[in-house]
Amino acid sequence: MVNTIEIEKKGFLDVAIDPSLDLFEEIEKLKKEKNAVLLAHYYQEADIQDVADYIGDSLGLAQHAEKTKADMIVFAGVHFMAETAKILNPDKKVVLPDLKAGCSLADSAPPELFKKFREKHPDHVVISYINCSAGIKALSDIICTSSNAPYIVQSVPKEKPIIFAPDKNLGAYLIKKTGRDMLLWNGACMVHEMFSMEKIIRLKIRHPKAKLLAHPECEEPILKLADFVGSTTGLLKFSQNDPSDEFIVATETGILHQMQKSSPNKKFIPAPPTNSCACNDCPHMKLNTLEKLYLCMKYEMPEILMDESIRIRAKKPIDRMLEISAQYGL
Ligand code: 13P
Ligand code: SF4
Image 1: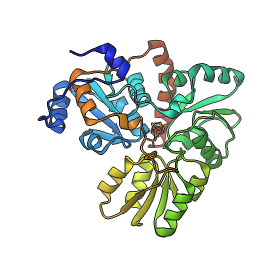
Image 2: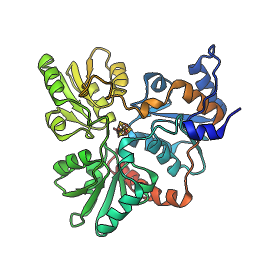
Image 3: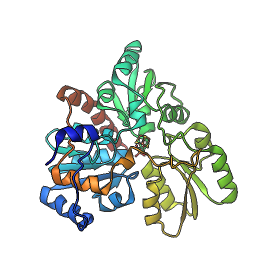
Image 4: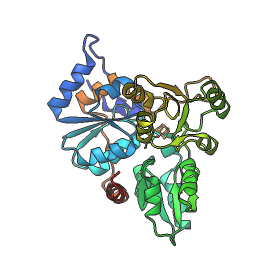
């Protein structure tokens, strides 16, 4: 019935679902039956966000994964996020609706190349953005996310040189923000590099009162133009607390669902990409669907598994990040 070789090939379970089932109800039932918690990133499709127990940014999701008492963690996000949950919970089952939900940023840093790069700079402290594989985490000293990155950078003693990987845009933003020089790995997110500066400027002319909100994975000219730069949670909070009625949002479009839900009278305009494509939708995040989510909860697969020695080495820099974040009340 369930063919594991096929799951490996396709990345997900391909089993027919009775069309008369109410998947929202079925997912709620499965959560109770299996003592499962459903964690979702803001970039997931609206239906998945609506059925999640917790929706958050990368830091919030890691913090929730660390403290959950559930037996099974169902991760509606991308592979590195589910992997982080597994690193923190070796004894729990962690499932991801589609194993092929990867990340261009994580893919830009293959561990074997990064190991050589690190060996060339043995005196450097390695800070890695959480958007990387367990293999890269195992080669890092501290992990950061977009919501705690400035604190993590400042936690490194001033005399210590720093390598920052894999996101060059976030790295460049942090150099400016903290005044710390860092050696940057040349990686980037395919979604956040797609925004068209010209189209954003045109939008700003048409909506002169709209504030531009941007994720720090965007390129420098967009960050310079932005009224506020922050993680997905940071952008959401800003949109809730700021008195403006209109916002242009330069990050993946999934976040607009929560923005619109919590501020129904405000207008949210997705920042346009360079082509007429929907490139501001992350193709990896959007591989997860409600149907795949239901099947992965029902059959408890595809499961995240990893080599124990990598897991142990990858956990140390994540623990360090969680400690520093707790110190600052993040
Ligand atoms: P945050 O969730 O930390 O804002 O990061 C966004 C992102 O690109 C996740 O893949
Ligand atoms: Fe990776 Fe970018 Fe997609 Fe986030 S939005 S998962 S950084 S490709």
